[in-house]
Image (cartoon, rainbow over the protein chains, first blue to last red):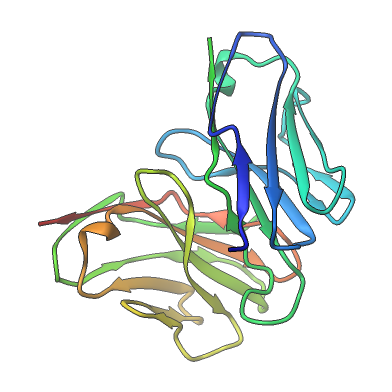
Amino acid sequence: DAMVIQNPRYQVTQFGKPVTLSCSQTLNHNVMYWYQQKSSQAPKLLFHYYDKDFNNEADTPDNFQSRRPNTSFCFLDIRSPGLGDAAMYLCATSSDGQGRSQETQYFGPGTRLLVL
Amino acid sequence: AQTVTQSQPEMSVQEAETVTLSCTYDTSENNYYLFWYKQPPSRQMILVIRQEAYKQQNATENRFSVNFQKAAKSFSLKISDSQLGDTAMYFCAFMKRHDYKLSFGAGTTVTVRA
């Protein structure tokens, strides 16, 4: 089945220690997104890639970076995690293609980040 | 920025009964999409239903249906014959066409009681 995959599902890091979260997709979608979601809140968009074009949200901290080496993979790098960065990180994808799913975002299962 | 309002933080429904979740939004756009997403306690966000603003016909997916009132900027979700597996947080979301940004409501937690 085509899907959005996130690894790892749980990540524990130390305060200030860089961490990378990964996302891959088999949907061949051209747009990929990273969201941060804190408990009982709506997801907050950090940035998205339209093909190779990177689009950062204005209020995304500089501590968060992203890489998209190819269509299938996207990475979220947190350079110096703070306690406030503990959250669920969701990856999503969408496509410009025609049809019922046009521009609809499909989410991965998320990576829960714990900062000690 | 678009505003999406879900005025019901929590709702409870008996199994097999019907529950309706409200959602209103504020936009000056004419061409947009509306979505309902479900996020069960396991936390994966799942698309429930999608509505294109230019379509007058309300979208339906099995037991889930919407009442889309474009003039009133209202997009409610009806869950019929509720099942225990419907227990989740439900998010209403808006996206302007070709904008690639979802604006989410605050969510409604639905609990289905056995």
